[in-house]
Length: 238
Ligand code: DGL
Image 1 (spheres, helix red, strand yellow):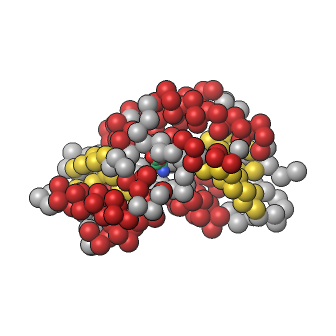
Image 2: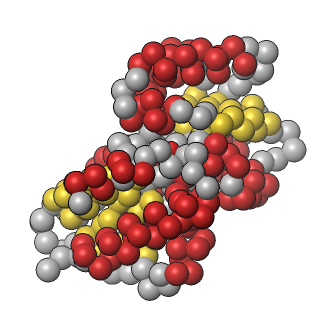
């Protein structure tokens, strides 16, 4: 039996990463775990979130025959990845972090990083900035409480209100790029573009897909048969 790639997020955000993985690896079998029961992740404590994510990883390994787990969630990655790698040393993991490195490598000078409060507040976020930002580069870290939840639940008015407020707060700043540091945010790319026209939006999902491919190749774990499939699991249904 073919082994699968487990993909997890608190909700629909991770599909932005899954889509890119399917584009790059169309012969793989995927299990997409949508944690509706515990959504949103972005305002949970590290301890609470780790307990939840560890439970899902255990389920994907023991019940779903996964060869790799992809955290298609910046919050889960920045808060839990280091501990997960220690706890499951034999499992292959790939995470999603805000595309700060991409912004810095491409020499943007004034980058606005949008992410959940938990991601913005994480040690991993501070590390990303410290490791990549040059002296002549500015990185504005902006937590967006409620935005992922509003996207998940399709609350259009709330999304508009958050974007309006953001635009107002940033009106005196020079911004040349925006990092979409939550996998839900690319789902409202068009709306963000309306508020910030001609500013480059950076989203790390294709980079994640490339890393998945590279790791599977290196470990000789690519699916050898043509059996593409996606199984969707919702924590509310189990
Ligand atoms: N999509 C997730 C992320 O990338 C989490 C959103 C949430 O549940 O708060 O951070």
